Amino acid sequence: MAGARAVMRVFGDAQSGNCYKVQLLLRQLGRPFEWVPVDVLKQETRKAEFLALNPAGQVPLVLWDDGRSLPESNAILLHLAEGTPLLPSDAWARAQVYRWLFWEQYQHEPTVAVARFIVHYLKNPPEQAERLAGLQLRAQRALRLMDEHLARQPFMAGGAYSVADIALYAYTHVAPQGGLPLDDYPALRAWLARVAAQPGHSRMGE
Amino acid sequence: MAGARAVMRVFGDAQSGNCYKVQLLLRQLGRPFEWVPVDVLKQETRKAEFLALNPAGQVPLVLWDDGRSLPESNAILLHLAEGTPLLPSDAWARAQVYRWLFWEQYQHEPTVAVARFIVHYLKNPPEQAERLAGLQLRAQRALRLMDEHLARQPFMAGGAYSVADIALYAYTHVAPQGGLPLDDYPALRAWLARVAAQPGHSRMGE
Image (cartoon, rainbow over all chains, first blue to last red; front, top):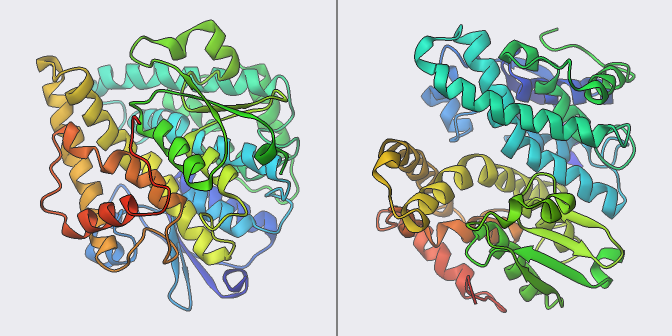
């Protein structure tokens, strides 16, 4: 894969779980990359210069020195993990990785990450209280579903640590910052500890 | 792949774009399957019997006769299209497919499909007017982004018809049912016609 050898720049916000996913994967794979800080709160993803790279106006974005670029955190994970132990080659194990990556972007991130954004970054403004309550209810359903799943298996997909765990770890481990305590989810907390104990693990914002 | 040979049941709602994606792919691949109707409006996805199959309470769900099951429409597309011309083997073309599949579930489906649901199925209740207006604004941004992308290339990803086109066709072609006219998006309309002209294409609800 040309993409694996060329010099890579990762445009990201250190406080974003979606960006942390890419950073964590690259560090665990031992691949060199340059981190280009982009401040989401300062609306830097909405500037013309950035929109020319990603019209969706979102980080993370990976840019290679040959001009190719790739947005969408979970697409980046799948692309960069291809051929490594973090993305199974077995078709059925791989299907499970796909399943949880899509579930993360549809059910988990839009609730857990947005609740965290409102509480932690916007400092819980009263006019968002009703919206926040709705998000927290749906976020708790997502966290409970993960807890029940992880009570039956050590990792999210295919019986081994994979990019599905990286994707779901990113916002789950900071869920309490969104007013989402994890006390009622023992299997989920044990999984968080297993993920953090993986070789080459690094913490968010480091 | 065992999954390709075993008998497949697809639990789906004929009016759901997410379910239509799976039906369209299987028909285009000429693979036999049994369609099991599940009525979302009648809350059949929330019944205990269905939740035992998919705790996320969503269709589509594919169930094989050996007991394996797979939810998440775009995960199903990737799994079933593996090894066919509808999912490129080239790593970079494949990365583009991933990109648009995740974009579809994060930016397109939650706006275009939900606007359609409110207008077409809930019959535009006044108490949803403000929410609908917000959704339509974001949906138009998504449709414009597609139009600009398709002005430069015939298909969404990798230069050829793929599961990325199937995934995005599903709700785009019925966007007008959500109060989202497509008149201002000529490249998008030309692409809709190209997708509908693919061999083995079948229409939603048929």
